[in-house]
Length: 108
Image 1 (cartoon, rainbow, N blue to C red):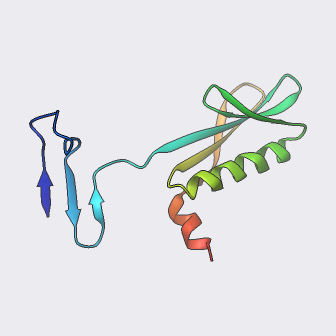
Image 2: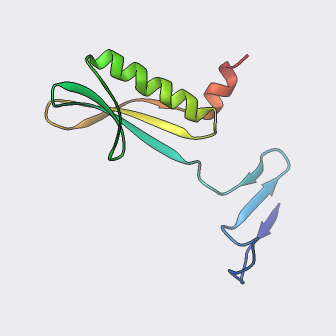
């Protein structure tokens, strides 16, 4: 195992301490995760990424389909997604996590 630490922050090789293993390559940096929210807002089902409105649909099923399609596309680019659905009181429940490894395993 090789451990690298950088004392000079101006050096381009600086950053987190990374470990290199023979089987896994580089480890130590967390996988980016995005949260997609599906909630009923102003008589439509909205799909949001944080504060950004991505799409509006007439039904919850259609909004979930859009959120799943977005999550699958970003998983192909190496980003993990969490899908959360809002209830009437404004609480969110996680219904799914789309992992890039899962998408890669199901690809032809």
